[in-house]
Figure 1 (spheres, helix red, strand yellow):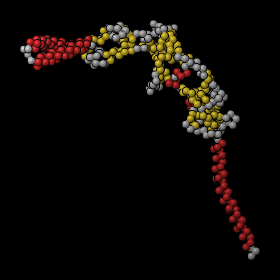
Figure 2 (cartoon, rainbow, N blue to C red; figure 1 turned 90 degrees about the vertical axis):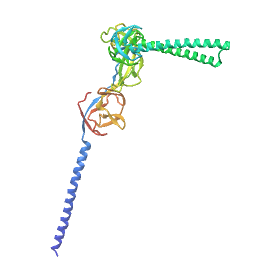
Figure 3 (tube, rainbow, N blue to C red; figure 1 turned 45 degrees about the vertical axis):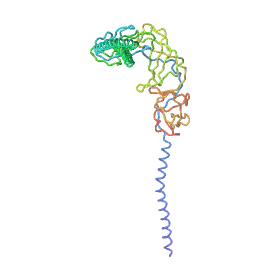
Figure 4 (cartoon, rainbow, N blue to C red; figure 1 turned 45 degrees about the horizontal axis):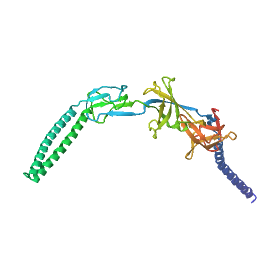
Length: 372
């Protein structure tokens, strides 16, 4: 009896020890998991940052364009045929009425000859019908013919008159067609394009020459959409010849294309040249400079641009806590490799320019490679 008590006490002690060991073994993985979680939350991300400062925008905008004629015309024959002669080439200056090219007029000449013969036949028929009508009129007044015969003679006269008018109209048409075998300049100017050769068969209305008319000239520029003229201070543009900067002129924005070129993302702008210097010939390259409105802007690399929902944003580093926060911004313009921020940033803000893709709000950061 006295020996069983110690044995029972020993069993109770062993049971408590086993339970304590089991709890310790279960707690160890949980503690390790908590330690890893705490380490993940507290681990600082390594990023590159930049302290942004506002800078004054460019005071002027300079682009290169080309001098073009205000009025251009595509010249074509009004009839089809084989080219018999070409009298001008690209760069030739012509005056109004000058002969530019000639077609083989064989077909038009044949039509004209046929129309001439038809008109001669119509004139002969009219003379016969007129004589018949005159005779029937005399006979009717003397009572030696019938009213029916008189009416028939009158109808034949009217038909002959109509036939003659139709023949005259056809003769005029064929005469004009014969003249259309020659292509003349409608106005004075310079030939800037040619699309025909001797021996070639051309169709009516096919463009064969392009004529840049003398007179007013435009400087034509293809302006990038991102730097469009919305910030231009006025419509005045200073022009200078690229091959000779001493040759200058002034102009004003005359026309802005309403469409953007889908290939180059540019907008075509035409500047009317005032007091055109003689050295600014057609096709000359000119540099156009327009003053822009003064503006203060903050520029960051495009790698700094993130998104907060559907709006652009950048990561900002708090200098005291060294934690990152996402700040929405308003983009003013996109440049090659950079973005202009209109609103949302202030001078002295430290912006994450690389490494922000894996950041989370409130995450500690360490930064290096500052460009401040």
